[in-house]
Image (cartoon, rainbow, N blue to C red; front, side, top):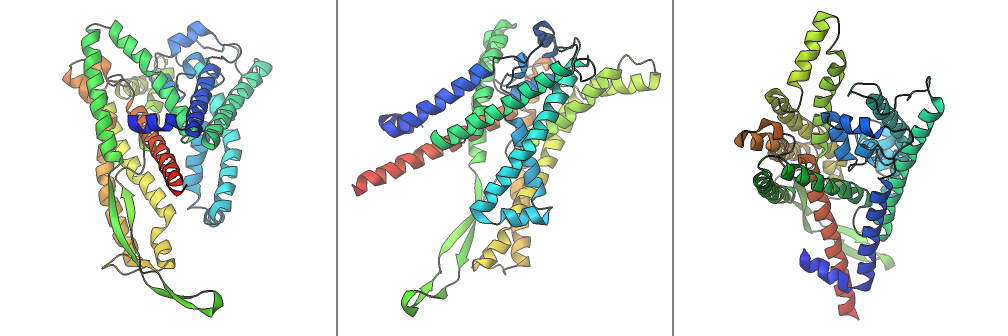
Length: 440
């Protein structure tokens, strides 16, 4: 990796792309310091002690802890992309558009951008209302709401919506003129920026140096494990039958007869199951916290039960987290694999898997292989998800179950995936320029 970076900096064009990418990421971090109007900074600091607020802060790259205009980041767009991925195989019209090559992909991207607008407004209003309604303690926007302060509320929503689209625009600039996927790098920069506050908090705690060294070792070992599994794939051999094709001048030419393979990744779902599972698990305790002091006995007892058993640190929470991550991994992988429609594409192109009949038998065989591979990937994701809890049990410090890694589990998956993808793009650029030099 260091060799590739050094070689890239020696080429003026690639050096310009890398510096442009770093400049855009720096600009995003500067914009993340601009707060929305009317924020109570002291109350905001108290709210950030809550589990749900901490998770959203990680996803926004620390922008939520300042409730800046970038508090939503690119996540409304990510949410819109996931929804579109789930809708394409369900709605025939969208499935037909998706099969229309580059034009179809551009159309789907356009629909995704349109869907981002209401999602950003809904997410912005929901987050601001949740953090201003007293659920987490002192509200950060005491007068938030269209009935109490309509102009302030409208200004906050416009600021959050504008911040989301600025983040998306900066990401697209990186994709076009920089190196790597811009949206992923925006998320990557925000997650990495949260590593230093975690280290400072660890150093300030009891046995801080010892804990920091242990967590650093566990984080590095986890990164190696993630790289090993993320790059793992099952290659299913594919052969293409020979066909006679008429060329110019009415000449007949034999084409085909090649061999290839279908790469099926061990972890096709990425970090999506972790985000789904953590959001679903934190939601009950968040709602229940509003009814802990209820005057109705049965409602108060249910709220206390949910608050205790669905809070980070309880054994029930981490067991449920593991089960949900495994279940969501199977679900999301099945949806994505069905959307690719590999058996039909193979049959249309004259390809077949040796020893397997085309059509229904090929579909059954591929589903069987995907389920087996996904089982390994699901168990791996589940292990990574509960790794902080396992480390805290070994160290006999349950209070550290949410911070036993220098970067969160979902954050580590994102960071490793983005670094691998960016390095592959850099190596491809270097290889292309190597061949250009050879030709000259």
